[in-house]
Length: 148
Image 1 (spheres, rainbow, N blue to C red):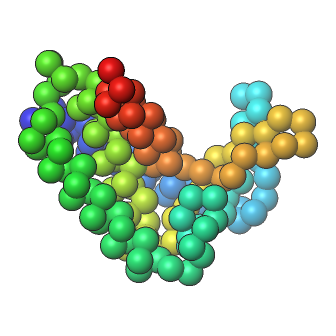
Image 2 (image 1 turned 90 degrees about the horizontal axis):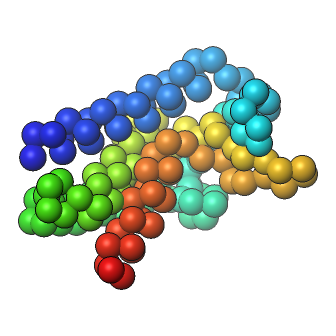
């Protein structure tokens, strides 16, 4: 269990570090093309949920994230096993890390720092952060573990 906690702390720390660096070095709502194809930095703040829904409902979203953290934590405590149940355990590690990363922003900043954006020609994705990637990866792997 110590390795699991250390991995969660590392992932949350990496998420918080990238958000700190984005706020420190990027200008709000200014696009920064990168040498990596199709990826740009674009700093913005999100007071809503994914894709901008529930704008201005930060307290409700923080409560939902706290409940999700407790549920994922319980499942990890009850069924987590990196040796015998690796994919399921990794899905929970990423779900917990992503939930905590954005929950910290909601509690301490009252908004989530988003700074990554994919684009192809004139099409752009919603702006996101590492915690969002963690949640997406965790959710997909969780669903896969339930189907196999």
